[in-house]
Image (cartoon, rainbow, N blue to C red; front, side, top):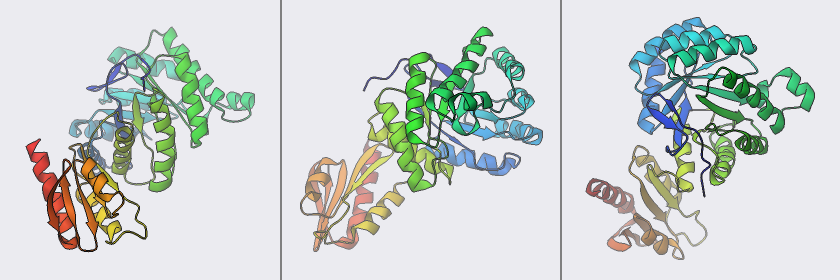
Length: 353
């Protein structure tokens, strides 16, 4: 898996592109005009490992409150602006670390030019965020619908225009709720420009369906070496977006953060109530940031082998189970003792490391 080489930009203190790690982003779901709730959510995102947060700026009051949020939040903040270019300019004045605009909603080149010149003056990057649901009307007439080619043409229009203004602090995204359209659009744009790409499947859905779509779309592109930063879009708690994002990176061996819990799906050979046990282990390890592989197994066929291969694991049976650490049996436990023994062993291992 060889990663595509891109230019490098910085959003606050986070570098994107080049040799920088693939960063995990999210977006606040609160009303930006509510400073307290928005700051609290940013704090929760930070604790979950989020590295950049996008904040919607729907009107001037939200823009004013954004300045207060910026003063209280530690993470880099991207101001998300549609329709009114003046909001982008004011957000930059109030401390935005980057601006996200959509060519289909920002209102033409003159307004886009005003944003670009202000960003250039302040040394801030701009994300050109193409969304299949808000493409320019002339492109929809030309292509008939929001095809990958239409999305790429929209992005290239803005990119080329920004380049005429000698502006190159650019990041690009091309998102659709259709996974195949998203993948093809990113493949096409990756052949055209060397700007860093922000990956995501927009409006992907709730936790289960959104995780599936995002894992396929983002995961496949990353495996092909395309992408420099990601955001998993889910209808729900944004902290889950961060967890899924790191899960995708972990599954591909790109970044290791937090526990990798493996557990058997159970079958007729399972002799313990494994499903609630696996859920309980995952719940108790939710806030663990240390990378560790944990096995929760209940099958006599694969259980002992999987538990041995994990950093720490349990393999249960009718009469209790075994606790493994680094391939060796540490102790035998009753069913009721297995989870607590596992958690305590994990805590010891984390402290030792």
